[in-house]
Image 1 (spheres, rainbow, N blue to C red):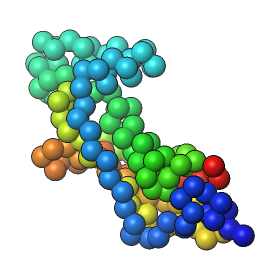
Image 2 (image 1 turned 90 degrees about the vertical axis):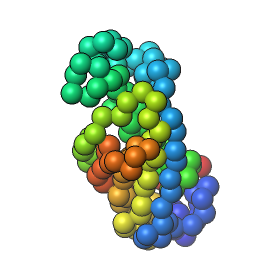
Image 3 (image 1 turned 180 degrees about the vertical axis):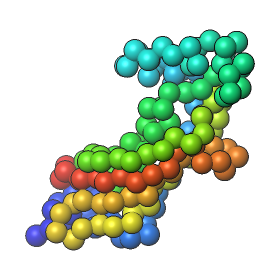
Image 4 (image 1 turned 120 degrees about the horizontal axis):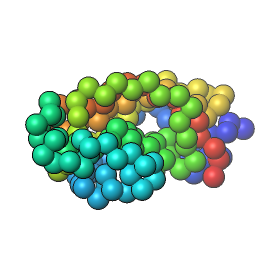
Amino acid sequence: MSAWLETARGTVPQVGEFAELQNEVTMRDIELFTEITGDKNPLHYDRQLAEKSIFGGLIVQGGVTSGILNAIVAEKLPGPGTVFLNVDWSFTKAVLVGDVITGRIEVIDARDDKPICNLQTTVTNQHGEVCLSGKATTFTVPV
């Protein structure tokens, strides 16, 4: 019996299947991420400095930007019990406090013999601009 049949989702993800999640990023997201990691970069906290920078305002940590992808793979597709084995992400545009980001994953390959998927991943802002893009490999543990 395939390990996929034992997962909470119950089916093998199909190539082309996708899932999305949207979230407005706030100062609270920055504060919570700082509590976890200790990242106190002034570009996240010093409004005056950040507004004078090439970013034009306070930016959120990259972990906040990519975190939306963690939520998608763990909650939607492939689903509960899923963890990242590998990621290859490029951060192409800063996410500003107040931006509404949309994370999207699309299955580009799914093994039949093991609960392993290769995904295309993107995070865009409310203007449709790509802030993060790349690929990821996931493994789903039966839960």
